[in-house]
Amino acid sequence: MGDSKFSNFDNMSLQSIDEESELIPLLTPEDEEHMNNEELPETLPILPLRNTVLFPGVVIPITAGRDKSINLIKDANNGSKVIGVVSQKDEETENPGVSDINTLGTVARILRVLQMPDGNTTVIIQGKKRFEIAEVLTEQPYMTATVREAEEIRPDQTSKEFLAIIESIKDLALKIIRDNPNIPSEASFAIKNIQSNSFLINFVSSNLNLDVKDKQDLLEIANLQDRALATLKYMNVELQKLELKNDIQSKVRSDLDQQQREYFLHQQMKTIQEELGGGSYDEEIDEMRIRAKKKKWNKKVKEHFEKELAKIQRMNPQVAEYSIQRNYLDLFLDLPWNEFSKDKFDLKRAEKILDRDHYGLEDVKEDHRIFGGSDTSK
Image (cartoon, rainbow, N blue to C red; front, side):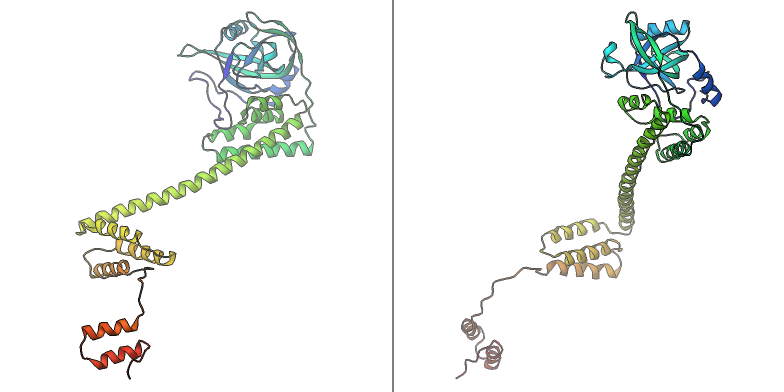
């Protein structure tokens, strides 16, 4: 089967298939009218796609991987070049049968078959119109079925509500392209130059970053205005996710840039100070930081110390102010912050010690008694 290599809103672009191919044209209203008037064959070979959904008018490349798919493509390319494309319900199914595929798909025309250097076959197909499988006729050498055209309800092209939805789809598509760095700016050219409203809806639906089931649900909406509104809702969700992602990345990038800036400035300052003779500079700073960790400081004192430490880091060790600042920080670290000793307020014991160690000096000892709160004179 063909594993789709379609573009989504993460890599949407107009691009050449190879160097010799022409740029894939956008669908014009005249092309769309001609496509809608084409007769649907009674029977079609059915090509199940593993991981994508084909919409009318949209061009996608698919890679044929299974023998059934390769045989189908060879026969169709040598014949009418028209096939029926449906999506699988489970992409893990290797040999899908009738119960493994969605019965509503898109008629496609083979535009080009390319033999790739790795030996695989890549096929460029373009969606034409929606169809439903009526009855499966064969499953060997590949699946064939009778088909009928799926009804599509088209709104009045002058409807104000429909036109407002179309304009909103265009605006949101351009915002997504602008905000997503993975989408080339050329994608906005495609959106601005799509003339057909129905093709715009299908083109955007095909390129939305959705899983197969959600895209299949969009394809099965018969009313084109309802499909446009559902597409718009998915686009709003996609844009919100993208804006949130960009906001988070911007904050992370700002924090990282600030850290890098501080690191490089610190390294430059370190080099300059080493050139000026500050060889033991880092060791002194590190030693003070280690001593600071052992201190029982409150938040205010700690912040003040960090501020003063940052100040000395900016100083040239050869200037006089460096020694003053260094002494200030040493004193700051030597003080017994929130550390208390157990004092003994025993005045009689103090008197004995004074008499023992300071014989005489009665006036001094008398002053101690008075200011110590006790008069022992008789």
